[in-house]
Image (cartoon, rainbow, N blue to C red; front, side, top):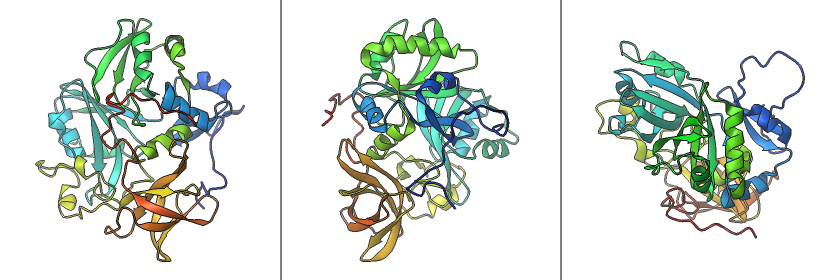
Length: 394
């Protein structure tokens, strides 16, 4: 029986004792989160806080929309180093990574030979022959190793942890926290090195919220406690605080950002879920190319607007009384003031604006409408810093 039945869910908490957690990793800020009463999900065998006893999910959402919210993520950076690092990544991803310049990031999707998706994430090119891939949940390490045979590349786990600072005041936090002021240049999907309290840290203009924001990468040589203390003090005037994945989950659905393993999986192609723009069929070769060349280009993933309830993940979508799709994500948006979600439709001919009935967390079917994604800010002006209005909480 699957977890998350809409009435309960299974999360991890910290309790006294020893043993049977051998496969789980705590991030460097685990002890900082502990006093807030975290409940964790397991993500890439790492613990990532979904919620906190002392931080309400809606409060966390508005912190993200109005100030600066921090999430210590479960993203799993792998390191690719050597003369053939670029060659390997270009083989593993659907996008042409030979065009990615040092100091820049790119969005990377990996597929199986049949075009089904393995995972996604952010590729950081730190130097000509050095990359990090901050991957979402998924079986990627062994896949990469198996295709590196005969190549001069070293694939390793550098024991790096990714934290996000997101929200309209996040760049003010960065400017205040950096010993040398705002790094320049530091454009959207750029990489920089900033010094926080005499500790140099890699940062990137990326995130999982479509809010203005950046991420920082805590490496083994860092003093994580001192690093967080510095960020907390410098960010205090801008309201910096922790929040959980539940709060970010709402915002990522509003923004049309997908989650590996639920919104897409090994049975969906990038075209199925609206990510075809990240498939470069002009590349000489990449894993899954032959299948994707022959795959349908139609998108089957739509937004769901449900005025009266919150769509339930895994529930059916009905059209004219017949099942026609499944809900892959759902939430109630405090900003839009209605239920939102994603529906993976059986028929690629489904249309935006179609009236459907949606399975919701109360166990009932509610009236809903298929919508385009994202639900607002279609040109991503907010994360690019081109739209700086802060929404009011009403």
